[in-house]
Length: 361
Ligand SMILES: NC(=O)c1ccc[n+]([C@@H]2O[C@H](COP(=O)([O-])OP(=O)(O)OC[C@H]3O[C@@H](n4cnc5c(N)ncnc54)[C@H](O)[C@@H]3O)[C@@H](O)[C@H]2O)c1
Image (cartoon, rainbow, N blue to C red; front, side, top):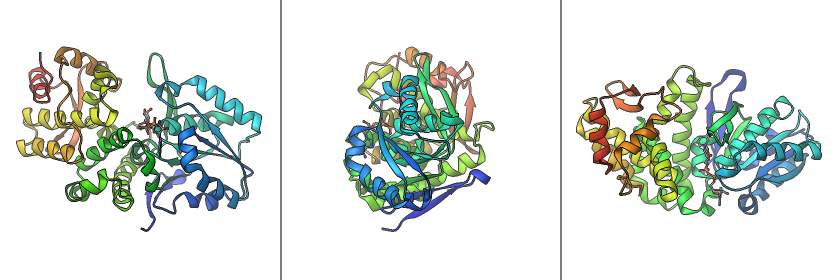
């Protein structure tokens, strides 16, 4: 299996997403000449995957230390950043040193935000070990933590020096976490990447079975889409980056309404099916598109219907509170000009599409 590169074109801040078995080894060249490198990770991830990183940092001639942060969304908070920054300071990390984030989206966000603010910004390399982080969280420079008042309310844009993704690290990922990433893979396939969609059609079994070569191909296709969107709209100013929220308006609401019953990727999956149907009810696309949305989601083994017992009025209220909506109801939907943002569609159409995915009343 070869190692592939996707360039995130951001002028002076451009960088590569490196995907393949040799990806982590690239750290040696990337960090050559650095004095100290702080590896930020979580216990379970470090136990499985820190060794190749440490070897590469040794080869770069730098001193390294592994700093563990807590596992779970509740640790993605300012107290964790405070504690991590203090440990980095006590170890003597300086502005011209570097941080490596080894883990999923939580580590990417916590280590990325700490790197963005520590000494007013130190270099960070993202080494994602979940499918979600490989295709989404580690690319694009968005970093941040949660407040009790809401998710990701404190953060910064801080582009990494590189993203190094070795899909063989996904072998140790719990099944539920794999499904989180598969929801995003379905999204990218439906954002108009016909090659990725064809791969999902042909190789769904190999994807779900974590075949590293197949997953590498999938990560590269997804990374290309994310890289293109980020290059077009680095700081979410033009609205172009909003297409990445396909399936997420209902997805976020379902995560809140169904609690831990639904993994993030499963909630996004139902959100994608809903988006296909809503676009169809609004006559933006023919029924075949809604069918295709269901097909892609189902092939990846993800749910196409919401769990029983959710009330449409409650779910609509949660969607209205979505931080990306401007007070009304905002969706990202397929249409004649591709996937675009749609504000305040006809409530009757929304109810009809919610009913299709099993949310009524
Ligand atoms: N910054 C962004 O652009 C962006 C984009 C999407 C999501 N996110 C954020 O990402 C977070 C979710 O990330 P996630 O889904 O990766 O979850 P996560 O970081 O919590 O990782 C999931 C679990 O898998 C474990 N794990 C990670 N890699 C492993 C491996 N290879 N083997 C075994 N266990 C492993 C982790 O320790 C954790 O328990 C959310 O907080 C979300 O807001 C950020």
